Amino acid sequence: MSHKLSLNDGVLMPTLAFGVGTAFLKRSGSDALHRPTVDAVKEALRVGYRHLDTAEMYNTELEVGAAIHESIAEGIVQGRDELFITTKVSSDFLNISKSIDVSLQKLKLDYVDAYLIHTPYWAESDDDLQKAWKGMEEVKASGKARTIGVSNFQSTHLRTVLATAQTPPSVNQLEFHPYLSVRDGNDYLFSLRDNMRDITISAYGALAPITRNIPGPLDETLKEVANRYGVGTDLVCLRWCIEQGVATITTSRHEDRMKGYLRVFDFQITPDEVMQIGASAQACLGDKEQPLTRIEKYHMAQKHT
Ligand SMILES: NC(=O)c1ccc[n+]([C@@H]2O[C@H](COP(=O)([O-])OP(=O)(O)OC[C@H]3O[C@@H](n4cnc5c(N)ncnc54)[C@H](OP(=O)(O)O)[C@@H]3O)[C@@H](O)[C@H]2O)c1
Image: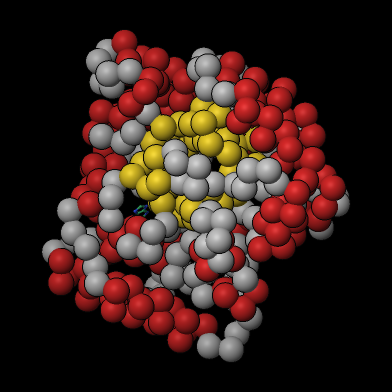
């Protein structure tokens, strides 16, 4: 598997991204630069990441922008063209041309590489989603984003967008790991399975089997596979996504982990091992209701507050 994936519009996207959300979320809404985040992003660039994932919602665009410009000035990266920057819109969905300008201003960039609609759950009608997608197409036409996509879209949302899209989304960024990959019943993996539009899945939460679902029924299987290749279970989780053609976003505040994740390209697991890991997760779920994604839980909690 290459270190870059070719998207359905021909744009090449680095397979592994460094996320500047979750661990780095800036909840205060403050516009003051958070120096530890800038330094962590610079460290990620120094150890070799070239794809950064941020979002309006994370409130870290300012820090990502500062890290990019300082890294170029200090020779950590040679220039803007070396980088792939993803950001996401999470407000003012019906005025996306304004939202991208605000993001670009914070990032101090002329364009981002990928611009995504962060979630579909704000939309009150199909028309809302279709209008928002039209706004995304205008952003791409303006050159302010090289490629456009979505995030947390279920099959129903994708079909709505595809019904009127001139340009299909190139990426759907989803929570994806063995405990969630079994949601075929409700078409969770529409974009992976129905490849007619060739929408690339980009995974977040890939490390859930070793960070959130512990102890869990996959523990032994993951350890066995990890021992076979002399790597950690974290790398097996990341490789399990990449082996299926899924781009992967991970993150860490620790330099040793940042560096360690990059070893995901130094080994491969077999198709049988990919299946074995998926099947072990599926077996433990049995007939139980499929788990909700983090964003579904968040959305439900918002509804009840
Ligand atoms: N589109 C969306 O709605 C959405 C939602 C969530 C996330 N994302 C993106 O995806 C990125 C990654 O998301 P994620 O945090 O869910 O990714 P992840 O790869 O599943 O988890 C990364 C986290 O795992 C921790 N970790 C790694 N190895 C560990 C170990 N052995 N023991 C304990 N903790 C360990 C790291 O903590 P340390 O810092 O301590 O190493 C880090 O915070 C985010 O930053 C964001 O850019 C997108």
